[in-house]
Amino acid sequence: MGKLFGTDGVRGIANQELTGELAYQLGRAGAYVLTKELHHQPKILVGTDTRRSKDMLESAFMAGVCSIGGYGISLGVIPTPAVAYLTRHYQADAGVVISASHNPMEYNGIKFFDNNGYKLRDALEEEIENIIFHEFTSLPNPIGREVGKLGIGPTSSIDYLKFLKTTIEGDLQGLSIAIDCANGAAYKIAPLLFQELGAKVYTMGVKPDGININDKCGSTYLKPLQQFVKQTKVDIGIALDGDADRCLAIDENGEVVDGDQILAICGQRMKEQGILKKDTIVATVMSNIGLVKMGQKNNISIQQCSVGDRYVLETMMENGYNLGGEQSGHTIFLDKNTTGDGLVTALQLLQVLKEKKKPLSQLKKVISIYPQVLINVKVSNGNKNKYLEDPVIKEAIHRLQEIFSNEGRVLIRPSGTEPLIRIMLEGKDQEVLLIEAKKLSEIIQQRLG
Image (cartoon, rainbow, N blue to C red; front, side, top):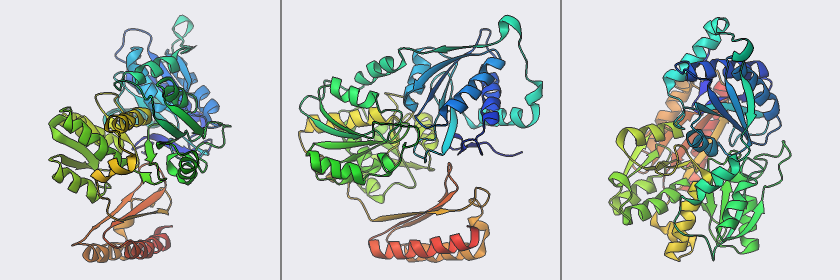
C-alpha cells in the first residue's frame, strides 16, 4: 500500500499528485472515519489559503463529504489555526484545511483536525489510507434526505478575531508593526487584528492573486520585510507563512528573530510569571544549541523531540507542557490553541515587547545563537529516505560527525512534506560549516538526485 499522509497531512503538486479525484476520496473516506460513530449528520468545517487550486480541491473534497451524508461548511480563506479553533468553537465533528502552508503555489495539501482541534493521530490517518486503497467501494451511499449538503460559515473570521484578542492582556497601543502576510490566508485578518488592538500597522504581502502566495515574501523569504522594517522604522516586523501557522520576527535593526529566539523570549516571560508548566520548553533536534544553554542559565528544561509540529505537540500533551515549537517559527502555546498559530505567537511576542519596554534587539539577547548551516537537497520522494542505505553517503556523514563531535552537531533528515533531504550542521565556524555542508549536499545529489 502506498502512503498518502506525511507529517502534515496529504501534500503534492495540485492536479498532478493531489488530484481532484484524490481530494474526493479523502473527503469521502475522511468524513466516514472521523464521524462513523455519530448518530447525527456529521458537520465538517473546511478552510483554505489563497492558492489557485483551492477551488478545485475544495469542491472535490466537499463532494466526497456530501456523498457520505456529511454537512460541509466552507469557512473560505482563513488561517489553519483558525480552523482548529473554530472546530471546537462551533462544536463541529472535524475540521479540514486545504493548504500547502509555506510551499510554492503549485503545491497544495489537505489536513484534518479532530473534533477537539488536534491533528489526527497516525492510526486514524492509516485507517483513512486503508479505506482509500482497499475498501473505498464498500463505503455507504446514502440517498434521498440522507445525502449531505453544503453551507457557509459567514462569521468565521469575526469569531476567530474575537478569540485572538482574548489571548493577550491589554492592547498594543504605542507599538508600530510591519507585517508580511505572504499573500496568504491571513492577508485580511492579521492587519485588522493589530489595528483593532491599537498598533500602527504597515503591510506587505496582502494582495493575493492565487499565484503569488509565498512568492519571495512571508516567513520563508525575509529580505523584503527586513528592508521594509528599516524603511518604515517600526518597532518590529512580523512574517507569516501562507496558512499563518508560522511566525518569525524582524527586530528594529532589520535582523531576523527566529523560532528558537521567540521560544526563549516568550518562555522566559512565562517562567517569570509562573505560567510555564513544569518550567519546560519543548523544541526539536533542529533547534539551536543556544536554546539549551539559555535553558540551563534560566533553570528552564529544554525537552527535544523529532522534527515536526505534530511531534512537538505530542510531547507537550504527553507530559503536560504548554510551550513548544520549531526554529521555523511554528510555535505552540497550548493554553491558547491546539496547534501552531502565527497570530497567537505574534501577539505573545508583542506583549513581551510592550511589557518590557525594551527593543526586540535587546530582548533576543536572552539566547546566544550558534552558527548553523541548513542546505536542502532536492531528491525524488522515493529516494529521500534512502540516504542511510548508500555506503558513500553514510561514510560522508560519519566523517562529519567525527569533525564536529566536540564543538557542534550534524543532523541529516528527510523532509516530511517535500522531496528534500535536509542537511544541518552546527558549530563555531560558519565558513567551515558551509564548505562541509556543500560537500555533503553534492554527494547526496550525485547519489540520489
